[in-house]
Length: 549
Figure 1 (cartoon, helix red, strand yellow):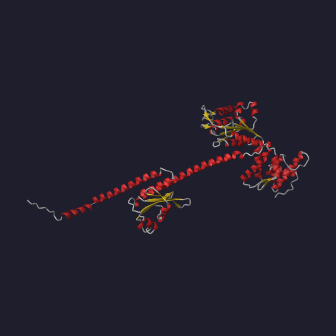
Figure 2 (cartoon, helix red, strand yellow; figure 1 turned 135 degrees about the vertical axis):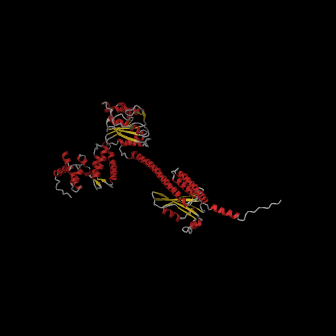
Figure 3 (spheres, helix red, strand yellow; figure 1 turned 90 degrees about the horizontal axis):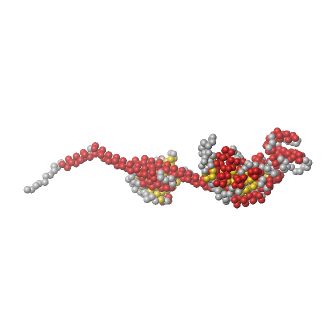
């Protein structure tokens, strides 16, 4: 039995095609396709946002500027799917300069081998907005540029780095192919990335400046310590006399050790300078030298200053406070005027010296300290020991190495170099230039007994310079205190001492009036007397016929 194949009606396929066209044109299909596109766009956006979060985290992981710039360029290449990129930053002149270039393999590129479209960079910087250019070689603004033609550029992205509404740099990336990863709708993501990059760069810059500032400060501290060490390496202690040379020799011998030292000498002889020279020439010179005057405060306050106190141990003790022994630990503590220390504190000081232990006021805890002690006094401690004002055992503990500084009047060889030193010091400080001392005035200085020692000499030179005005020569008139004491004066006129004193006084007044052009008020200042007193002396010596100018 033969079977004959049954053919479909001629209009079957036509009807099917028609039904399919109706189905494709239906609203449901269109919505489905739109949904698919939206899903694809959402996946693309989520992918970009995840990448942005990852990149931001990487950028914030370092404060090293060079490392950060590499991360930023690599991240931009990855985010934009480009072949290479480079970054420019604003320099101190406000101009953009090349900082780094990289390729997609995260390799550095040299500036000379990185040709770019400067028009794109300039446009992005001027507008302050991310610039995305696709089909660069067909774009009318760029297609004729030599760099575009040579590199066969297809896609470029340029991101301005903006901080406080100012462009501080740009990131440029490009590719010789069309990027399928980005389009104009991705620019807000790139804007967010550029904003984060600008903040990260600023943070890295500030961190770098802070590190540099710390390094500079550390260097300055080292230099300052070196200067101080050099300053007190006897260069600021002037002395050519035999006694001072012996003192310098002693300092050189004892400075390397922690031996306790007692410096004695009259007020103004420079005991603290000697202490500083010992400290800065010893192994503790990089640590603190702390000075305290034991006669300048009450016993209670002195105890608290030296040994510290516990909160509530006395009225006003609002917190725990370390004393100077703790503060100076590792360094040197200079106890000036040690002879004025009250007896109860002498016991605590002796224990600190012998055992290296102290207790704060109101506290039972023993604290160990490592301090070199240098003490000084202008008193005769042997007399104080006999009178019961100073402990003999403490004296022996302090007087391991004694240094006695003779008064300036007993080492006249030092007066001239000291005078010249102070003259140079204060002319520089007052910006007076070159000032000389006339022979007559120098003779007065050299033969004066200087009961106030070096300090008195220094103050005398400073005062003379302050009162000499624009004069480039210090004459006897600028040292009225020396002349008034009758130490040195005019030439020998014979007669009694009283007559000589009157002659000297008259000469000083004449020179003061000449120096000041007859201005009595100014002359009185030079002579360190009142205006009325000078008037009386002028009348007494018959000098009232001088006219004021």
